[in-house]
Length: 427
Image 1 (cartoon, one colour):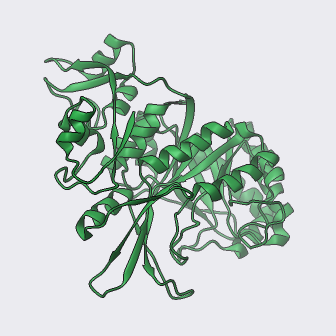
Image 2 (cartoon, rainbow, N blue to C red):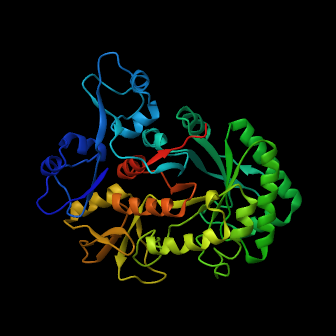
Image 3 (spheres, rainbow, N blue to C red):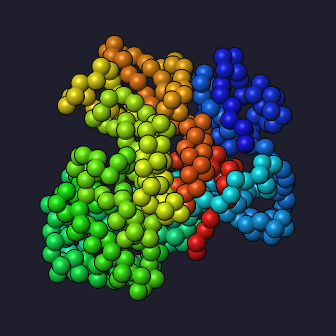
C-alpha cells in the first residue's frame, strides 16, 4: 500500500505510470468521482496486488475464494469496487492478495444510525468486527425507547459482523441528560427494570453485546455510575453478553469539566469488559478551527489511559468526518458545518484550494474564501491521517479501533486499514 500525495502537474495517468498500475484501478480503488480534476495535496491510495484473478464466466466470489484459499469478505475488502456480493462480471480483475505483509490483527467497531444508506452499509461491513446501532433511549422509569434496528442487525450478521445494542441518555433534542442519568444511577428499581429490559431486547433482537454511552454524568454520580456499569455487566454476563463503555478523552484523573469528572478510568475500565476512548472532537461544531483528532492531543489521552486501563481492553476512537470552519472564530456565535472526508476534497476542487498537511496534528486542511468574502478553514481526514492514527493503535498495543461514525463512506480509510491489518471477526 502506497499513499501518493498529488503534486502540481500530476494526472491520474502519470501517477499510474509512476507505480506501474492502471488509471482504472486507482480510480476504482479510491472511488474517484472526477479523476480528471485532482487537487494538489490530495491523497491517493495505491494498492500493490500480489495475486490477481481474471473473472471467468460462471465464477462467483465464493468459488474464487475457495480456489485461492481465502474468504469472500477478504475479496470484498481488497476489491472495494464490488458494490455487493457477486456483483462481478467476466473480465473483471480481482485482487486476491496484497504484496505487503500485514501488521497483525485488529478489531474494528463502527457506529451507525438506523437510517444509514444500505449501499454504504454493505460496502462498509466487510471491514467491521462490530456494528453499534445508535441509539436506544431510556425513560425515567427504566423503559427503552426503541429504534428500527432489525434490518441492520440482520444485514450485519449476514456479513459476519456482530451487532451491538447501544443505550444512552441522549434526548430527542440531541443532548445528553444528566438528570435522566441521575435517576437511573440512583434509583435501584428503575435501574433493575432497565437492565431486564436490555436483556430482553438483546435476546429478542439477537444482539451480540451492549455499548453504554452516558455522557455529562454529574460529578456526584461518579461512584454510582461505576456501580451501574458493574451491575449491567454482572447481569449480562449471565447471558453471555459483553459490555463496552464509551469514555470521554481524559488526560488526567482529576481533569475538570462535566464531560470528564464522572468518567473514572480505572474503575470503569475494571467494571466493563471493554472501553472505547472517544478520541475525537477537539475540533467541533462550536469550537475554533482545528483538527477533529490531532494526533498530538490524542496521544495525551492514550498516555493517561494506559496507566489506568489494560491495553487489551481498549478501543481507540477515530473520526470519519471533518468540519468547515468560518474565520474569525467568535465564541458563542461561530458554528462549523460537518463535511465528509470525500466532500472535503470535492470542496477543495470546487474552490480551487490546495490541501496542506499539519505535521503536528497529522491532519489535512485547506483555506478558501466564500462569495461573501469570509475565510474558511476546512479540517478533515485523509489516507495519511488515518495511517497516523493506526500507527498509534499499533504503538500502544490496543485491542481495536472504533469509528464515529460510518454513515458516510470513506474509501481511503478502508483501503489503508485492510492493507495494514487482518480484520478480526467474532461471529
